Image (cartoon, rainbow, N blue to C red):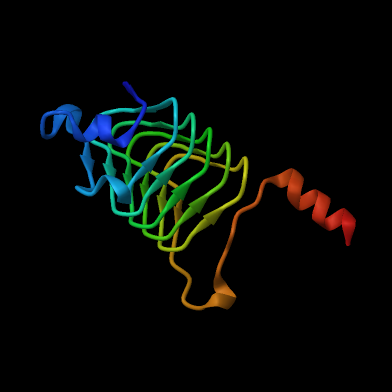
Length: 140
Protein backbone atom coordinates (compact mmCIF):
# COMPACT_ATOMS: atom_id res chain seq x y z
CA UNK A 1 0.00 0.00 0.00
CA UNK A 2 1.33 3.41 -0.94
CA UNK A 3 0.12 6.72 0.37
CA UNK A 4 0.30 9.55 -2.12
CA UNK A 5 0.10 13.27 -1.68
CA UNK A 6 -0.35 14.35 -5.30
CA UNK A 7 -0.80 13.16 -8.85
CA UNK A 8 2.55 14.72 -9.76
CA UNK A 9 4.19 12.38 -7.24
CA UNK A 10 2.65 9.40 -9.06
CA UNK A 11 3.67 10.63 -12.49
CA UNK A 12 7.26 11.09 -11.27
CA UNK A 13 7.53 7.37 -10.53
CA UNK A 14 9.18 5.01 -12.99
CA UNK A 15 6.69 3.66 -15.51
CA UNK A 16 4.34 1.02 -14.06
CA UNK A 17 5.80 1.31 -10.58
CA UNK A 18 3.57 -0.73 -8.30
CA UNK A 19 1.30 -1.51 -11.26
CA UNK A 20 -0.46 1.86 -11.38
CA UNK A 21 -1.91 3.25 -14.58
CA UNK A 22 -2.76 6.94 -14.53
CA UNK A 23 -3.96 9.20 -17.32
CA UNK A 24 -0.90 10.85 -18.85
CA UNK A 25 -2.22 14.38 -18.28
CA UNK A 26 -1.90 15.23 -14.57
CA UNK A 27 -4.57 17.93 -14.86
CA UNK A 28 -7.15 15.29 -15.74
CA UNK A 29 -6.83 13.23 -12.54
CA UNK A 30 -7.37 14.60 -9.03
CA UNK A 31 -6.37 12.68 -5.93
CA UNK A 32 -7.17 14.05 -2.48
CA UNK A 33 -4.83 14.11 0.48
CA UNK A 34 -3.93 11.04 2.56
CA UNK A 35 -5.17 8.52 0.00
CA UNK A 36 -3.81 4.97 0.05
CA UNK A 37 -3.68 3.12 -3.24
CA UNK A 38 -2.49 -0.45 -3.87
CA UNK A 39 -0.92 -1.74 -7.06
CA UNK A 40 -2.68 -2.52 -10.31
CA UNK A 41 -5.12 0.38 -9.91
CA UNK A 42 -6.32 2.13 -13.07
CA UNK A 43 -7.45 5.76 -12.96
CA UNK A 44 -8.86 7.05 -16.24
CA UNK A 45 -9.28 10.61 -17.52
CA UNK A 46 -11.15 13.20 -15.45
CA UNK A 47 -11.28 11.00 -12.34
CA UNK A 48 -11.55 12.68 -8.95
CA UNK A 49 -10.66 10.82 -5.74
CA UNK A 50 -11.62 12.49 -2.44
CA UNK A 51 -9.47 12.83 0.67
CA UNK A 52 -8.60 9.79 2.80
CA UNK A 53 -9.76 7.18 0.27
CA UNK A 54 -8.35 3.68 0.08
CA UNK A 55 -8.19 1.76 -3.22
CA UNK A 56 -7.03 -1.86 -3.18
CA UNK A 57 -5.53 -4.12 -5.90
CA UNK A 58 -7.28 -4.27 -9.23
CA UNK A 59 -9.56 -1.25 -8.81
CA UNK A 60 -10.55 0.40 -12.11
CA UNK A 61 -12.12 3.87 -12.07
CA UNK A 62 -13.72 4.93 -15.37
CA UNK A 63 -13.51 8.35 -17.01
CA UNK A 64 -15.30 11.31 -15.44
CA UNK A 65 -16.12 9.44 -12.21
CA UNK A 66 -16.01 10.99 -8.74
CA UNK A 67 -15.19 9.09 -5.56
CA UNK A 68 -16.14 11.02 -2.43
CA UNK A 69 -13.91 11.35 0.65
CA UNK A 70 -13.25 8.48 3.06
CA UNK A 71 -14.36 5.75 0.62
CA UNK A 72 -13.01 2.21 0.61
CA UNK A 73 -12.87 0.33 -2.69
CA UNK A 74 -11.74 -3.24 -2.15
CA UNK A 75 -10.10 -5.65 -4.61
CA UNK A 76 -11.27 -5.77 -8.22
CA UNK A 77 -13.94 -3.08 -7.91
CA UNK A 78 -14.85 -1.69 -11.33
CA UNK A 79 -16.48 1.74 -11.63
CA UNK A 80 -17.60 2.65 -15.16
CA UNK A 81 -17.63 6.16 -16.59
CA UNK A 82 -19.55 9.11 -15.11
CA UNK A 83 -20.29 7.43 -11.77
CA UNK A 84 -20.68 9.28 -8.49
CA UNK A 85 -19.83 7.62 -5.18
CA UNK A 86 -20.70 9.57 -2.04
CA UNK A 87 -18.70 10.17 1.12
CA UNK A 88 -17.81 7.16 3.26
CA UNK A 89 -19.00 4.44 0.88
CA UNK A 90 -17.59 0.92 0.98
CA UNK A 91 -17.49 -1.19 -2.17
CA UNK A 92 -16.35 -4.71 -1.35
CA UNK A 93 -14.61 -7.28 -3.58
CA UNK A 94 -15.70 -7.56 -7.22
CA UNK A 95 -18.40 -4.86 -7.14
CA UNK A 96 -19.25 -3.57 -10.64
CA UNK A 97 -20.93 -0.22 -11.29
CA UNK A 98 -22.16 0.51 -14.80
CA UNK A 99 -22.14 3.93 -16.45
CA UNK A 100 -23.71 6.84 -14.55
CA UNK A 101 -24.39 4.90 -11.33
CA UNK A 102 -24.90 7.04 -8.25
CA UNK A 103 -24.13 5.68 -4.78
CA UNK A 104 -25.27 7.87 -1.89
CA UNK A 105 -23.27 8.88 1.15
CA UNK A 106 -22.42 6.05 3.56
CA UNK A 107 -23.65 3.13 1.41
CA UNK A 108 -21.99 -0.30 1.35
CA UNK A 109 -22.12 -2.72 -1.57
CA UNK A 110 -21.00 -6.21 -0.66
CA UNK A 111 -19.05 -8.84 -2.62
CA UNK A 112 -19.99 -9.47 -6.26
CA UNK A 113 -22.78 -6.87 -6.52
CA UNK A 114 -23.35 -5.53 -10.04
CA UNK A 115 -25.38 -2.42 -10.75
CA UNK A 116 -26.45 -2.84 -14.36
CA UNK A 117 -27.02 -0.03 -16.80
CA UNK A 118 -30.62 1.20 -16.92
CA UNK A 119 -32.39 0.97 -20.26
CA UNK A 120 -34.15 4.30 -19.65
CA UNK A 121 -34.18 7.09 -17.08
CA UNK A 122 -37.33 5.54 -15.55
CA UNK A 123 -35.36 2.39 -14.67
CA UNK A 124 -32.43 4.22 -13.10
CA UNK A 125 -31.62 3.12 -9.56
CA UNK A 126 -29.67 5.37 -7.22
CA UNK A 127 -28.64 3.99 -3.85
CA UNK A 128 -29.06 5.96 -0.65
CA UNK A 129 -28.24 4.87 2.91
CA UNK A 130 -31.00 3.10 4.82
CA UNK A 131 -31.29 5.81 7.50
CA UNK A 132 -31.76 8.49 4.80
CA UNK A 133 -34.52 6.40 3.25
CA UNK A 134 -36.26 6.08 6.64
CA UNK A 135 -36.02 9.83 7.15
CA UNK A 136 -37.54 10.43 3.70
CA UNK A 137 -40.40 7.98 4.32
CA UNK A 138 -41.21 9.45 7.75
CA UNK A 139 -41.09 12.98 6.30
CA UNK A 140 -43.76 12.11 3.73
